[in-house]
Length: 377
Image (cartoon, rainbow, N blue to C red; front, side):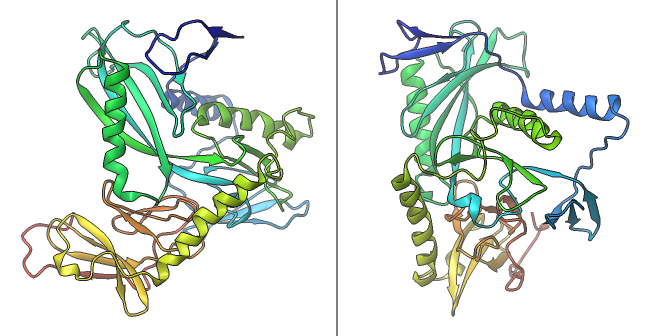
């Protein structure tokens, strides 16, 4: 049920708030652990394989089903496959024209237990902000809990110099809205996928007969991915489900075509214009230890990182997804793609899709420092 709140319990500017009653807040890792226990202990034929990287998904669109190829060259066959990989690894273009990847930021502050009403709060600002409360598991007898304040999202790979400012703005917001907020305990960032029409994509992958996807969680993955699991189960078993067309991945972005066109131009044109721009630093010898940048060597753009011992790591700056150029993120020490949001750690390893492989080592070079007293980090 929902009701309009006459007064919001925190000092936010909007006078209009909706309350959804009978909701729940639970721990995502404990939820996943519970599901895994049910699957492996109560179902005889279910096995979970971790640390198994899928390189390729093949659907011959016949009744023979599908198969995947792992990084070890092993083939796994099945009748149907569900890709719950956050960012689909089997689609290079279609789905990524319909959604964008954002970095999102959060901070956790100590507060006296019970001083703020327990709920999950969202506003409708752009970028939006949210807050919630959680137990302090590190010291349950302290009489305190943690206030989590998050938001200030921005497109991955864009406005990289503003990341620290976003944390500053977020803390200012938290302390203004919650004067009771105490010591800052944690801060972190994550990545979310935002569909152009704000609805997730749950169902049959466009152009496939046997491959299903769950993506576009819009920051509410616990809810949307559970909906996706319920829906796709029905689709596989041929059971009619009224949600099918609402969340269909093949749906057209007709509600706001101008927004659809605007988004794709905003991420595509700047991404490829980076090819003709100079590098971030003309002389990598001036690069500080623990820092990185994008340089130009002849016709090539390279992603460069210098570790704390002075050793240089040089990789191709070309994102393996659609060949846009990555940019260095100084706050998180990553190389981020501004086109579709792939991210790589400072050593070129893929950490966020859609890229399904590392920065190519075709131009990889490791240059040891002249003097070195400790091992490479």
